[in-house]
Length: 109
Length: 119
Image (cartoon, rainbow over all chains, first blue to last red):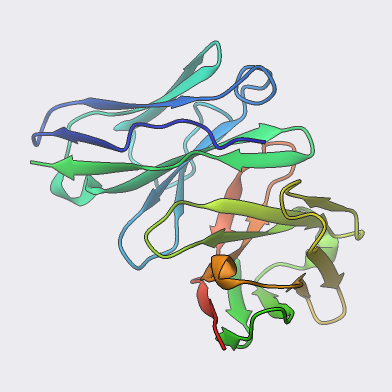
């Protein structure tokens, strides 16, 4: 299985919205609406931000939203805040496997 | 609150076997869910290693399957990872996490432990 494809970096100014894409194949992202997204600050463990494509765990801001079209899933962060600066990873269910994306570094300008 | 804590040697010699344990508190492994291992080489992305169901059924990353064994000890409420024939490429922070199973997501994570492969 190959890693899902994410842009290496994205950036935005406070208050703006950004979208991070996550492209897989018909064997993972395209077959299941089961993509999760994780936020990771330096030196910290990843934190689940979106699961099952578009659901938010309790406590996660509604500024974070997820969607999917075909083999590509997306994470949108609206109303960017300084604390959103972090690395973001997507992960897809793939039957008996799970596959992560390469990660995207979000810079808040 | 579910908490996970990894433990094990921080230094392993090349060709030897890496062994880590994840102690779970705040939830009984016997109650359900899958339990997984994920690693992150320094400065790189996340890689799923494998997951185990509380009954003992295992699912491994095909690229690591020949070297990985994950086991569960419900009496101690913990699960373990063994990775054999390690090389420098296996140097990474190793995380344990609760795997929700059908959703394929990881909702609770340990803090991670750095394992360095070096002679």
